[in-house]
Length: 170
Image (cartoon, rainbow, N blue to C red; front, side, top):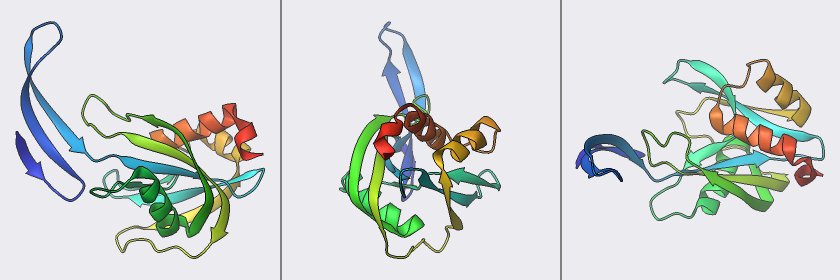
């Protein structure tokens, strides 16, 4: 049963039967999902954004990402958000993998993309987004993660994936 709804998600409370036959009241967030982009500038450099997140009250480093609009395909979301947040059009967008960032509380499925052959067209952030983009080497991003300077889960997953698959940015 839906108990709250807004533009990006709804909160539900349902009675469910678990695989072991036990019943449980489940409170969860139903989410349309999101697209995450790893912008690759050249053989050495990627783009991260530094964004103020009011929910946690601080600036964090992230890969650009956004919520999938109603009836929108994840690739369309990826292309739109890449322009909005960092000002790049992707000549090539490669779907890497999907993952659930927090399956104990939300249905959100994140779609991870590699954005290559970028053309700068100018960013168009939404008025409530406070974003700075930073070009950096993958090695620098890895070091920032290891030093605790990157705290965003989707970004950590993307950095570690690229560290293991460096041939993708060659």
